[in-house]
Image (cartoon, rainbow, N blue to C red; front, side):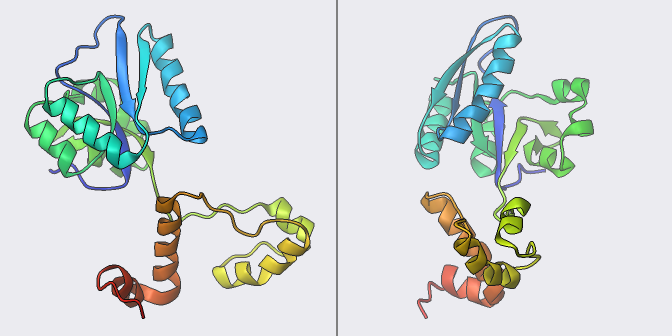
Length: 215
């Protein structure tokens, strides 16, 4: 089974670095924004509490970080662990024997019993063996609403996009921002893609993204 290409970020141990016994562990990742850095600190605290020492090696920018990470591993200068999306790049490293087989650890700790959705573990599995730990999943099909905000504006909480748009003026009149999204290009692009499919249909999405139509 191939390492499935999906929007899953995984922490993977590099094969040539041993982690038995207390030692400093260099960990590369591209989680550098405020909220991401706060989340990474939870991992770091857990590693430090285990007796190891987390050596943070953050690299800003996912594309740049992936290039550096892959180059270091393939070039014989690996880190102890790294963030890496599943897919062909990770599969190539596994096939080359450059990633640690975590199957025994996964079975001993019962990862299949608590990793949810359970299919996430499939993304870390190659030919029946597990090579990474799912730690994050991206999906643009989520929207978080504040019931208190709608209560303040005196309107019902919307259950679909049309109701959301109709309620937006009441939120603005109450001094509230109807819709907020991150300011990075990938965040805006992801939201746009969801709207294209949901409101315009698959044909519109394909026309814009596959055929590059400007109409």
